[in-house]
Image 1 (cartoon, rainbow, N blue to C red):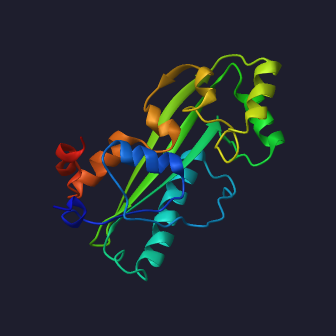
Image 2: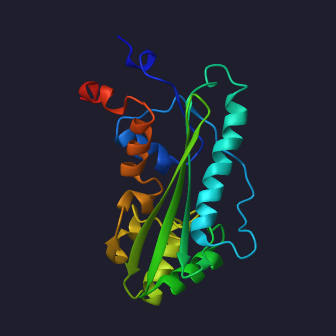
Amino acid sequence: MDLKTQRPRLVLASSSPRRLALLQQIGLEPDALIPADLDETPQRNELPRSLATRLASEKAQAARRVAETREGCAGAYLLAADTVVSVGRRILPKCELAEEAEECLFLLSGRAHRVYTGVSLITPKGAERRRLVETRVRFKRLSSAEIEAYLASGEWRGKAGGYAIQGLAGVFPVSLIGSYTNVVGLPLHEVASLMVGEGYPLFGSWGAAS
């Protein structure tokens, strides 16, 4: 019997392979991916946690408007998230240039920073539920050679704060307080709690996972 026909439909408002892999890790296979193309520029004096919350909600609402026009997507659960890395009140970019990533790595070297992920879930009834998750990370002091090698890897591209903790940069943190998957891009405990709380049968498919 096809389990997909028994469970509610799920739309992920992201094209991030990391977020998709994290959902798959806990047995969630989205029926559709609808990334939202938004201007992610912080508003004037906007705090990092406010930015993560706002963008997650705006992504969810933008994706819902598209989902309502797609066959099989209207009335689905819709999940969106946005991750922000900050040092104090300073919001670090999602790096597209090597110069940006280099500046971020020098800034993060030997000091603590915070990673915020805003999560927004729109239910089939149209209600929106939100969570904000914070993780504190401290990096080792990075040498110029380590920074140059990491920049050469290209792994930083498109990553908030210029690094991917699940990749080569996994050797940089000396301490982490909070959710590891939050730093990767999607806090699984909070996502699961949110979805189960809204009636999504997350655990129903686990018996067939093997």
